[in-house]
Structures are given as C-alpha cells and as structure tokens.
Length: 403
Ligand code: FES
Image (cartoon, rainbow, N blue to C red):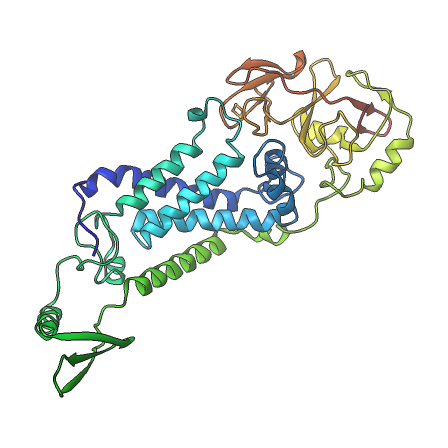
C-alpha cells in the first residue's frame, strides 16, 4: 500500500502537463519533420548522432548504433509520444515518468554534454523533473475515467501509484469481500493459489473452504502496470503510424550520393565525385589547391537561397572534420565559403538564415557571419565555426572538398 504524501497533487500538475505536452509534441514533430529521417539532411537523426559521437561519453555506443540510426530515431519519437500521453492522462504514469527521466538523461549525455555551464542545457532539468514526477505519482488528479478503471485498486487521492483503494472508494460488494476476508484472517492463514483463486485454510481446523474470486477481483499491481504499459505503447504506436505521412516510405532508404549531398560515413563517393576529381578546378575563396569529393552543386546553393548543407565524407583526410555536417554559402560578391556546421557552443547543427545573412544555431540562438570567417555575431557560442576548404568548378557546376 502506497502511503499518501503531504504534497497536494495540484502542485505537480503544471510540470506534469508541460512535460507531457512537450514530449508529445517533440515525438510527433520528429515524425512530421521531412529532414529528421533523411540521412543527407544536416538535421537528420544520422547527422545528429554523428555530431554527438564527437564529444559524448557514449561515443563508442553511438558509433556502433549508427547503422540503426533511422530505427533509433523512430523509437525515440514513439517513446516521446508514449511518455507524453502517459504524463497527460495518468496511464502508466510512473513508468512514463521513469521513461522520460531515462530519455532526458540520454539526451543530456549526448546532445547537451558539452553545454556549459551545465544548467544552460534543458535535458538535465528535464531528467530531474521527470524523476520528481516518478516519485510523486499523479496524485489521482486529472485522470480520465477509463484510466481510473484501469487503476481499479490504485491510489485514491494521494500522490501515489498502485496499491491503494480506487478513486471514490470501494463498492459495496468489494467492502463485503474485504470484511469477510478480514474475519477469515482472524485465526486463519490465507494462501494464494494463483490468479483469481484464494484458498482460506483454517488453522488447526479440519474444514477447508475455497472461494473463487468473482470477475471484479482487482488484478495485482504488477498486472495493472503491465496492462497499462502495453496499452500506452499501443496508443503511441498507433498515433505514430497516423502521424507518419506517406513520405515515410523513404525513411530507411540509403543516403543519396552526389547531387549536392554527401554519402554517409564509410560509403564511397558517388560517380559525380569521381568525375569532379578529374575536372579542371578553380581555387575557392578558402585557398584550396586540389579537388576532392563533390559535396554540393552550384545549383543546390542557388536553390537553397544561397546555401547548401552537406556531410563531410567520413574518409575525408585530416584535418577535415570527417563525418561532420557542413554548409556552403555563396557570399554577396559571388564567392563561396564552407564551414563545419557543428555549433561551437554545444554541438547543434547551424542553419542558413537567408534574411539575416547568417548561420544560426537552432538550439540556443548563436549566430555566425559567413562573410567574416564565421565570426560570432551572437552568443552563447564564443568561437567561430571551423572553416572547410573547398574547390569550386564553375564549368562543372560543382563544389568539392579542398585540401
Ligand atoms: Fe548552443 Fe548552438 S548549441 S547555441
């Protein structure tokens, strides 16, 4: 039996609703984001894992999981949806809260690991908040009737989970059964024989009486938790399926090569790259002297409003940031520059902001000036983005890695 807490359930309601809505939104948003599952996109789960592998204490684990990046992204999205629904409805509440704490801790060890000072990142506070919710329970507040039914025999009004009386108290039949059980227990020992059946054996007596439980016998707390967790997972999976648009068909396809995109780590450059390596090259603004893998086409930059994202090939020679997301920008004078798109603040991937003519980080708002060596226009980043040498072949319409 869970002991009632002195904490009023209303006290945890704001954080519960905020966390629940945020996780639900984050999960659905991932599924609806066209770039999240596109390996060639700088904001894809693949690109994010590659960036995390550069500094996370879980780097080895992340690298080993790279071939499953698409599935990992999908699992994270479904888990977030399930956790959000659990927090909002109270369904498998504590399990959802523990899941939220675990996921947030994982994000802290990857996405937010280099955030300094540590309290600037959101993931650690989320992990602690979820932990508090897991300890407190939902307090039987704002629970739909269907969930209350599933918690039959669960906590009543108290900040707690399973094991107490149902909301509204016991029914007359339940009270009679409990009373009978109490009377029977005086001088007798109750021995459970299995699900739905209890044999009451009189101590020192010759009579033996067995009562079969009726259908309204409450399931054990473990069964209730299992039932609720399964239901929650089912709801999350159904919602995820509904959220996935038809383009999901392409979720797990191989990354494209050439055509303005770069291969995933370990894959060989596409045919366009081979051709470009033999083409006559014109030195780029970064002083490159030799052509390498094609990372973008001039047409891609024009289509992208003055910039194109790419991934630095994994086999790129040092000191090139192999595996990193990169971005090439055409400046006002017509020249091209390329930078490592990993934000120097905490490792998020910067994006091209055409109206502001800047590279902007979506995580904490840092901005960099591509025309001045990616100098910091706005913090919290303190260092400019790393420059990537490129070779522009105007005749072939390609941009390749330089040396
Ligand atoms: Fe914080 Fe980029 S990661 S501003």
